[in-house]
Image (tube, rainbow, N blue to C red):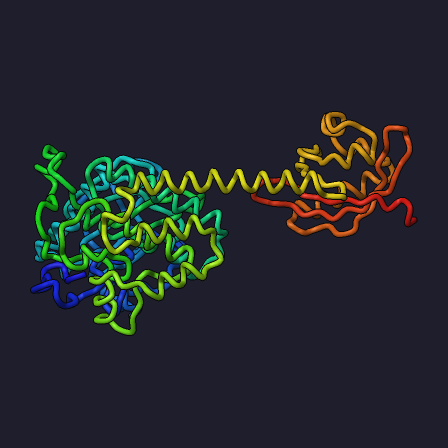
Length: 463
């Protein structure tokens, strides 16, 4: 929360610089995010939204003193660092280069935090942590590190500007939990978990970013700590840093920390997924800070209870957000296991409901694929058509359609393939005794799974 070289004098008042409130954290939002056309980007903006003048941008374009990388353009500017897109001249790829801003070149704490981030990301070799390719020092003395360029959006942007499904969001949250479970297994705490520090790639890959505040929980990684600039949390850390709206009470107070501080952060992310709001709210920084040090989340807990969400997820979120660390899950691994158990139970419930629907439906209900085969049919198909389920599923369903209706049926399949529903489409189906009946279909495709859900009725008697 505090500025890179001016920590608060005590923890009884809010720090001068608070990430996520009126004054962003020095490293807030710095992720290799590429959401704009690469060759014609809009004017860069600071964390406060002000446009950067061209001469300022040119003045900040660093000389990496490294012939391997050619900077192409500024991608994103945070409070402490600037991210550039660069061409890798040895390998056919684009990379992200993060450089410390000039105003922090002589700030030891900012330099230490910047170095910590790269070293932690290198130490945590995991799919959920962006890989670091190289570290170096610019010609003017500023440190930089080269990392994977992530094409996508932050989870915060997805929540505020996108329309992700609940299943997609839970899948993202599960990946976050697995990444943090790995970090905790290596003795590291992130201490700034929030939707803005989660990147979701264009193909669904999930990365936890901004590891500049990471700390060891104990002394078990002494060999690594010899060259790691961070410190173990062995005593009260008076230097309170993080993002107030998502911070555990003990972190806001500067108390002893362990992995359960990150568990609170996971609960905060889950809370925003379920309610659209961060745990702490207030009209100003002082109010938010007051809520954080006391763990006061009355409105948030009410919002969770009132949300149209499975109660098991609400209970998990509330446990993670418990005011006292002892009332939370012990680590991210425990959160991940509880989430997996919930997802397995939910899947079983969905399958049970579908089985009940299949069995009780008076209509002909089926699931088909775009290759033209029934994937599942209820017993009414056998009752109406006279074939066994095995016979109906053994060959393309078009074989049961009257030859004169096959072209129209294929045309309707194309309509479904474009994401449009088909309503009250009629064709003739052959029965086991060689006769034809008229079926009226209502169908819709589930594009993500390449499946067609369809309901049919025998309307022969009405013709």
